[in-house]
Image 1 (tube, rainbow, N blue to C red):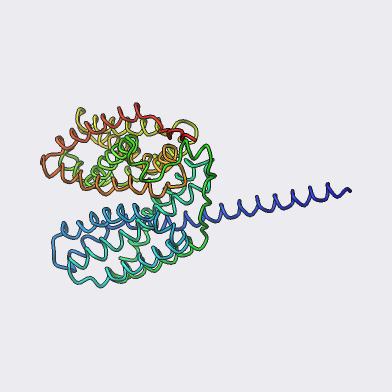
Image 2: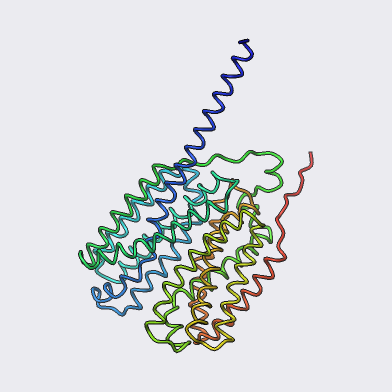
Length: 411
């Protein structure tokens, strides 16, 4: 064997070892992300605790339920700055800190003696921990798999959604056997361990190559926000979150008060929403790797518009009620899944956490807007009409929007 052949074989061996190492790191990061996301999704079991906390603090249930609104807003705010934290400390340290903060928030919630303390611990602190870990781990994992962004988003956000379902049974069992305060302690311990383990498995995704592609489609947050496409995407995201979060949050009341259905039929809406939400995440997430993602969002908007039209213009019976909720939950789950990859299509992967973090503020703002519109107009039908108008505008924007292209720089 010649010297050149020996050198060639050594180079090939090193290359193969490098490929194997990168594949292992990517898979460990994906596994860690799924574990952490499952635990972080547990905050959506919050409604299980409203009645017990209201009795403990001797306040109306509505006062306790408001803490989840604070949590949603804090979650969105934390998501918007998690990119900066990753740049400074790395994904592992920030994820571990988020897990410890989540445990601390639940520990303090167990000892909350006033509504103000509840808002601080279960609202602000728990929401900030959840938002920090959620978007950071999701964006980092997507950047590791640029060739399968849609599928990775579906797996990651699907785990987040399944976390609410899995912890529903965990927390119900704990409430039954351990009591309210101890349930918060055990929930915090389980979630903290899972998030910390997930963080230890993760590695920061490498920066994408800088070159002609950088010039064409890689924007910092400062560069992105001066382009109309950023605000078009932000409005679409806010509208979908507004429609989804509002309807999901009051689904049982819509069934009883608007559709005139019995309590048991209206309560079954929770299961319909959970299945449709998960279906949207998986179906539209995988579909987004096979067709332009903005067209997938257009389909999601069309689904939500269909649901709103059913609520407004058809006789309300059990089937129409379930189909309408299913369409809206399918759209919401799918859009949440596709959007990180969509934002990377428009503004690049290198600054995805910051760019998507800014757009993700629409999650918290949309949640508040739905409640504000409902309070302003005082009826379900008027609120549905406003939301339907915004959905129609968003659908039009999704059909007109074009990917931004950086102006070529003169030598």
